Length: 288
View (tube, rainbow, N blue to C red):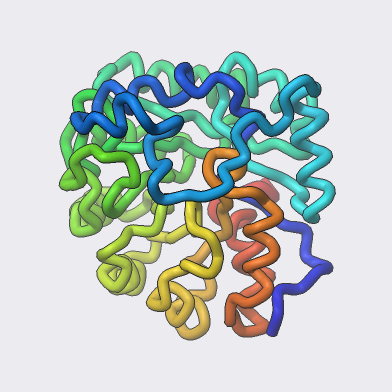
């Protein structure tokens, strides 16, 4: 069945306009060691993407122009990382924006204080992290992450975490999908959602999702024509409850490209509403 047009979409990775590339990506430029990443690329994974909508929204109110784009493509709500800029959007339109806190476990207990404060004051619905983008990197199963996982369990918040080979030219071992097995074992009540594809270990991700009830996968940073076959097959069989939609606008993909290519994704009828909406509501407990 083609993608239905009557299901309001919840996008689990969307951002406000990115107008200062150095401020946004400077730390990853510093972390890279190759000359092209340091001096040539406008953003760290530029070699992987075409037509990146950088500069989109310039001269417009960031919230207004983002809502306009969401409305155009039937995106009812979007999860955005909270910052001084985006926090205004969350407070102004809590009906449209879902707040998420991105963390760095290298900061120790300050990270835990940040999570508690963001939960109490901003009403965050999730915690996120890009392990390969940290300085220094922290593996998914390292003890530095354990206080974060514990606090997420205590506050009943899901953890969104990048898994698989990172796009930026930084080391990958910290995001090996096998690390998730240890975390799921030690925190069986934790709801975990992988960001950015888990490739080339997507088959292992499927095996672990079969094994661990709390483990999920979202499609962030992938144009739909590149969704891994193992993930589509899993969603169409035993994994309809485990695969969630996330885009990558405006970080790397336009919503137009995502939604145009989405029409050709071969999900079965029963998968679409879960993928586009229902699984996000359940995992983030948006109906609570």
